[in-house]
Image 1 (tube, rainbow over the protein chains, first blue to last red):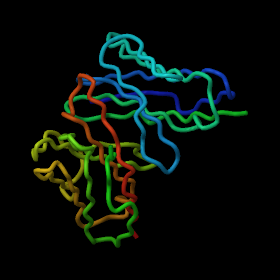
Image 2: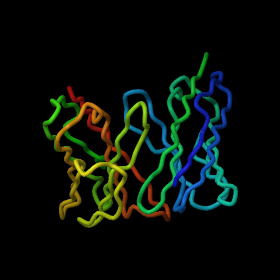
Image 3: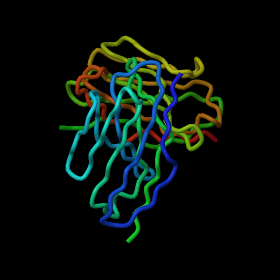
Image 4: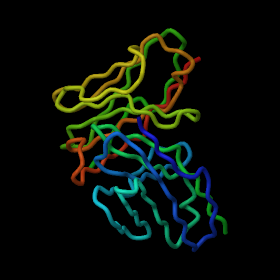
Length: 108
Length: 115
């Protein structure tokens, strides 16, 4: 089976940094994705990790440790538009298994 | 470069009817997968196609079916609609559906309401 856990909600102040953790236990692993989803919209791709380590992309970074079944998404210099749900997903056998999502609220 | 295109965007159907949703992947992408998103269950995998072959299927009843055409476009069909089928149906595409830097992109989705 697939078990992917991430916190339900997080709140942070504009300009701050927030780290969203994701732990997973899956029967197989071909990579880990992070998506951003605003209310009423489709998920948009943020990052992808298949090897251990840190991937940096502008204000967003993602880290993966396959041995620990752990990933995090780091959002720096938070902006109001970053208020959204962030989804952690594991790819295995052509299928993405998603966590329930973390709702991030950015306050002024 | 056009993204993943889904049609229709919104639709309302009556219980017992059937519905067909369409997806055109990003040009060059041959893997198309479908997901259902509901507030209670989150995002759940329906099926994945590559070169007209279904390679994986999620835990949904047989009322949910799909297919892929030779141009990589895909359709999914839900027959005998139930109220619980009301959801956002998302299509995603990638070059091969596997790893090795293969980004998976989602379309804007089809909002289905069953009344």
